[in-house]
Image (cartoon, rainbow, N blue to C red; front, top):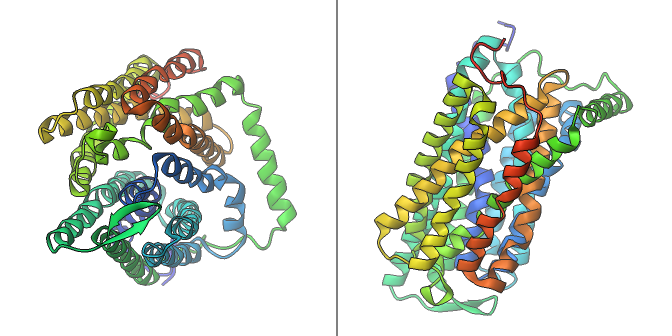
Length: 445
């Protein structure tokens, strides 16, 4: 029987949780897990920050190829195909980790993973709107966000803890060492990360199989081949030009690019700092301890901060809380100055410091997300929001690229002092941006 949203009634519970879990996992693998993996495999901080920051590029240019997802095939077909490619990318990383030229080879597969993940995001967000009624879209927005965050916990926490546990078992068994990128790397470490990526590849084979069965077939989910490519691109460029004609677009772009200037540098060096030895200025945590700190306590405090930020902005409006959110996302970076100075070995203190920083980030990042909605509001809202996310990724990519080089030049303690000083542009652009005082309030229509 045909319905408005599909050929048969399919419960959204059967596909929304798994779909958005599958969206979040490859992103956290590319942006966070890869950093820890490369650090454990002996790659320098300079190379880690440079190469993993380049992996933001697919999300930067995502708005430019989103029309292709509309023109060719259905959103459902794109989702299934990208999940298969993501699984292949994860399996490819696992295959290349034990090789001599593992850095170059694994990066090639991480690029495949990044492009597949960005394309999957386009298709999944489009499919969400096509597969659900307006009422269900509103009702399930919290569910999709929850399972996306759950993917963060699994990626940053459980999978890294798995790798760390395998490392510990292999070390206890007395494994031999192998040489990679000029430093001694334990064979158990190589094996641990190989197994971890094979586990993730297997997960996406299961996602692929499940979604072939579970995803509905909305009647509206059709390729736009009836329109010519010229028509599609004309509409796209008109939408793009309309974005850059927004009032005070210069200040808007400055906010999108500079609000996270400090965080973009910090995020690439926190895991290396936690893993490095005290002789190098680090805290010498194990892989499993880093996974626990960021994947459990970190994600929990991040979520609490994000929920509180959204609640307060909805109650009083974004403008009232904007300065406090800028303070929250930036000043807790000072915990890393404390950690790099004191070099504590007490895990409770370390976890509390990370929890404070992540709570502040969650609370402050709410301002960024809400301001992107404010900028995108009006005609072409979906496309303009996608453009905003592209600038967000660009603002993370460029500062992150030189952060590893800078840290190795001046050391962890001076680097974290610089990171705190680098928060100044965030405060400046937040004070200058155009923002309606009523935006975000519950009474807003």
